[in-house]
Amino acid sequence: MRAKTHRSADTPDRAAERLEQAALRYLTRRDRSEAQVRAYLERAGAAPALVVTLLAQFRRRGYVNDAAYAVRWAEARLAQRPMGRDRLDAELSAQGFEPPTIAAALRQVYEGRIEQELAWALLQARAGIRTQAKQAALLRRHGFSEEIIQQLVGDEGS
Image 1 (cartoon, rainbow, N blue to C red):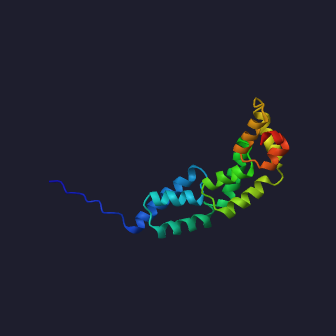
Image 2 (spheres, rainbow, N blue to C red):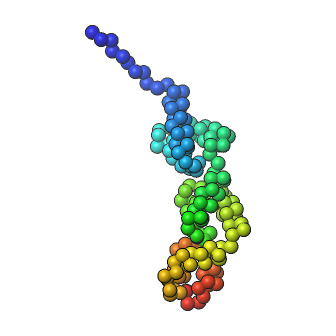
Image 3 (cartoon, helix red, strand yellow):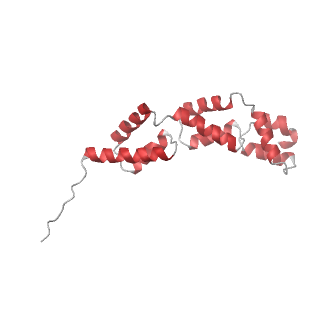
């Protein structure tokens, strides 16, 4: 008769190591916010204390840096699609960044950029939109301020 092999359950240390390795693989695929890593660890069944410990280690090692990631993400997003501060603020918030991180990223990303020029580039890219009302609606959807909309489209766009 064949001896029955019994696979013992993971020890807490082994389980923590397995979760850490899984999280590191998750981080190597692309940049992640701390909120995304936290959610990943929680879905994987990590205890709250382990989540806190791993996130602290990842921050110390530079694997998670919300401030730098928020700027990189915002820069890439603006390169793809011109948008106003309000829209970019909402998109950064949806990525799980904290308000102070978002504010700092917006300051850095819009430094040296003229938001009005971004709005103008968007209107040029959508040159088929002829009426001022539709142009204003487009700019609003892309998060440009009413002041910028008034400057570019005028009173007819309200």
